[in-house]
Each structure stands twice: as structure tokens, then as C-alpha cells.
Image 1 (cartoon, rainbow, N blue to C red):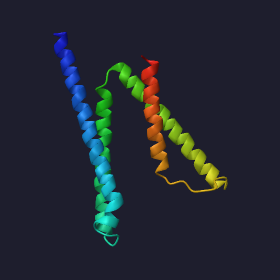
Image 2: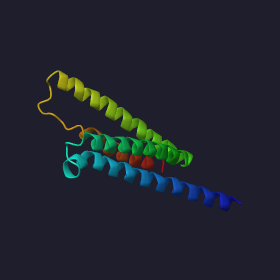
Image 3: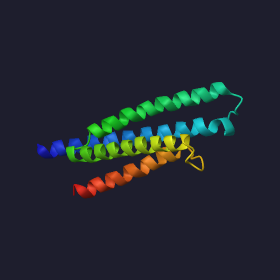
Image 4: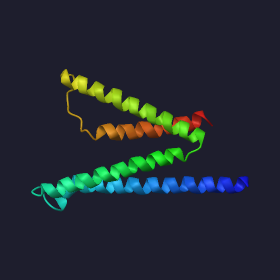
Length: 139
């Protein structure tokens, strides 16, 4: 009976992982469409098409958030703890680092402007490192 529960748990974990992957790809695709569509496809003179692409991207983002929440709920306790610790560290680094940059920029301490894309990219790096450290820590 226990083997069936483990198999069922594995299948559910795989299902939530695949859904998360598909929603991630959908969100990335709609983000690329919203970003590059005005230049490559419909032109900047079509604001309605651009707003529609942004709206579709927001809807895909909501789907991604729901999929990620379900993915977290489908993990075992240790994996969930590792991922939630990594999320807490990532949020803290992004929040503190982002506002530190805003304050430094407002005080004219920053010699050059940084592209806003640096923030989510650096948060992604912090998240991956925090997950790896958590896995090593709880080995």
C-alpha cells in the first residue's frame, strides 16, 4: 500500500513540475511577444496590439504564479523548506538591493544607469545559489 502512495506522490510531483514548466514557457513566450512584438511584428503604431500582448503576458504570469504555488505544495517538507528559504533570501536581496540602488541613484552616487532587467536576473542567480546551498545544508 505504501508503494502505491509513493508512486502517486511521485506522479503528482511530476505533474506539478510539468505544469510549472509549461506555464514558465508560456509566460516567457508572452513576455518576448510583448517586448519584441512592437518592433518585429505589428509596429509601434499599434498600441492596441501592444496592450493586448501585455494583458496576455499578465494572464500567463498569473497562471505561472498559480502553477508555482501548486508546485510548492506538491513538494515534501524538506524540499518545500529549502525552496521557501531560498525564496525568502531572494526576496530580501531583491528588496534591500533594489532600494539601496534607488537611494544611491537619488543621491547621485551612481555613475551609470543600470537596466531594470539586472534586478530579476540577479534575483534568479541568488535563488539558484540559495537552493543549491539549502540542498547542501540539509544533505
